[in-house]
Amino acid sequence: MPKQQMQLENNTEVLEKIQEPTRYKVILLNDDYTTQEFVMEILQSIFHKNLEESLNLMLQIHHNGKGVCGVYPYDIAETKAMQVRKKAKENEFPLRAILEKV
Image (cartoon, rainbow, N blue to C red; front, top):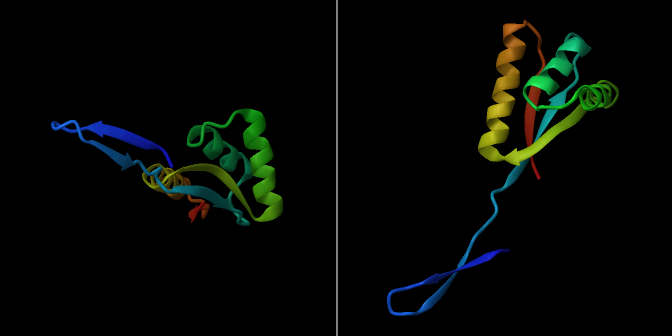
């Protein structure tokens, strides 16, 4: 775990533990209604995957039932999952994104 030193006014050194934020996987779940093209659009627009990455991940989701789109600190992971749910709802797809602690 990284440590950072701080100088106090009386020249006493204090070691502070800096803890990395807990990270979460954003996982897309397969369903029978969401199109593969829409999943690829989500992967490209929200998770910034290129065409090849989005195609491979979409196929993984399709064949395995789920796929990890990225690993982020909680706030970012929750925001991305919320963006997926919002865009899916706007396009009338039941696509789900869940979080899983790393």
